[in-house]
Image 1 (cartoon, one colour):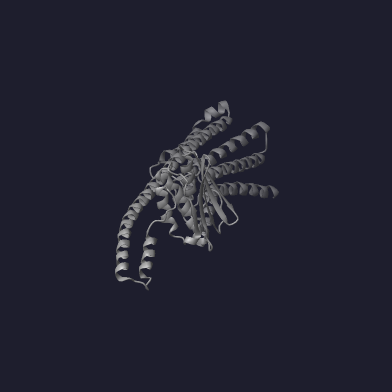
Image 2 (spheres, rainbow, N blue to C red):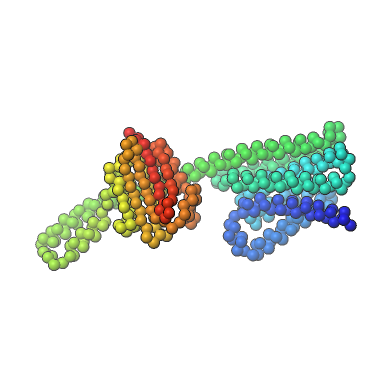
Length: 426
């Protein structure tokens, strides 16, 4: 009776380890987890399909003792679960295929290693069975941990022009090779020993690891190129916007100048001694003109566009005498438009908002500091904006480093600050 209980216990460990280790990588690449958490029907469906997966791991090997059928059906079922209930992503399919291959290869290694120990140490059959299950479970945990690292640290999105069909063939062909080598190499195993299957599987595993590593690097490079292209297009559009804005300001100044002349004539002819009408119109026209913040033409346009959204008492800006002409108009737009957008985002969530922009020339260095009050907590590399990728500051840093400058960010209490340091670029 005790042997039966122990047998059932080890069988349960075998099935549970296989099912849980198969589920965990798929759950890491799941899509919208909020939708999943709020959908009770979907959660119930997932429990049912994973119970079905556990049942297939038991029933398929018993059905005709056909290893090829077991591998094909279990792999297809696993991919269907992941694609339709979790991620809907081609990269996710690649991860799943890779995991299935690693699972089959490590199980083959565990079976052959346990068999070799059984032959060398003359173990009982049940002991051989227990060792085989423990080795399978142990190696599955290692494989799952490996895929956890790969998914969390190296997972990259595939861009439209990047193909992964060829990469998917690597684990598929590897599984076919292991299957055919197993069923067609009896003479080789009888002559040289079954331990060579362990070496063969290990070599196939190494080849797959190398292919995955190579694919990760190529995919990451493609993603970075795609992001750089998007950033370049965004910067060009922003620069074009400010160029058009400058043109509109120039036209407005001409119109405002003519209107002022007309108002002066009206004031002299009508002699509005008691009325403040003309004075009010003058103030309105002055509000339409550009404020003078700095000698840099493009920076002055950006500051006028961004700071008009704040009240005058919320802004303190001192940039006169600071030379920034060494910055290209594109980089000026990238740096200051991003920084001011971040400040304006904080202004929406802060009741008593204050923005300070201070620039000074210290010997051979140009130092510019932007500080604003905030209710949030700054975490480097993260963005609190809804739907925002958090790459604004990274773009600013890249633009600053082009001029051998440095960017420093931080928070003291309720004040977030950004300091730009440029060496003398003359």
